[in-house]
Length: 333
Image 1: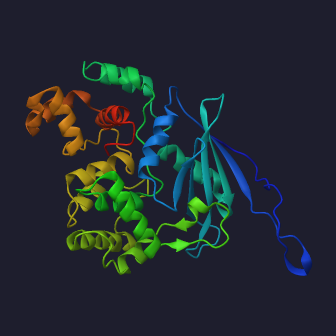
Image 2: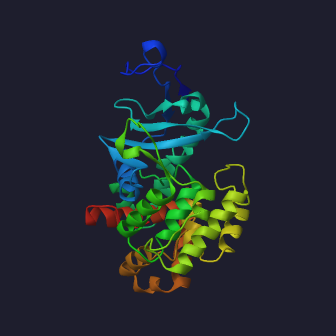
Image 3: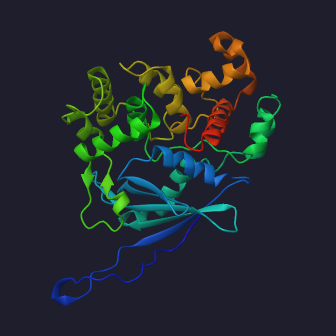
């Protein structure tokens, strides 16, 4: 991974004191290599179907969002802010991340985070060969040999979405998340990209927000805000790659309103466990039972899924991807 030296963007209009032009915002570019094949269009489709309105967007083959990063240089808890844009290099086996704003100072650290988020270290040929030993997955791997498990910019955001998405469609969850952002997030003044002009609410802000008539049952609201309080207190370090996965799983599962599906979904996308298995996912269960009615029984499904270890997260993504291909959109997960 190589981070280019900071470079100014094209000149912008505006004046500082005494009529001088305002200094351009810093920018940085980071190249993020991966092992081919890498199915960038399907990664973008997955993110597009779950994008938080105003915070992140998919446009012209790029993933774009407003971001913040702890400003270690300040040493006072402040954060650097800016915009992230990620595209695939047209010729080389790498993604290209462009950082605009103060976050450009943290290009190297953010590059490591993006490597996890976009699942760039996965050995796609080895994973595909392993899953293809099961005749169910051979055609799925052939159809999408470079499939990845899309991660998340923020584990906190992902859990919020997972809680909101319980027992509702992906589209409905996106609508409610948009309301939450507008009610408890921060709108950025003079932001250059209209579709990323909101910051996702902080854990403390969400924990204290008035969630009346937000579109969720009271128990789910309580679960959401209880979770936010735990993150705000530092008890759930979801975005620390050094944190113990099993401890985080147990802590999440012990919280009211968070069940096995949510925990495994978070383990897939935020904790980056390649063997996480959201086996109680309704769409996943229906699809597998359609192949073999005995899979409707949890014990039989677990026995079959054992053969997919240690890549059950990719098995789930292949099933969801097949459904999305047939539906022409983002389904599952």
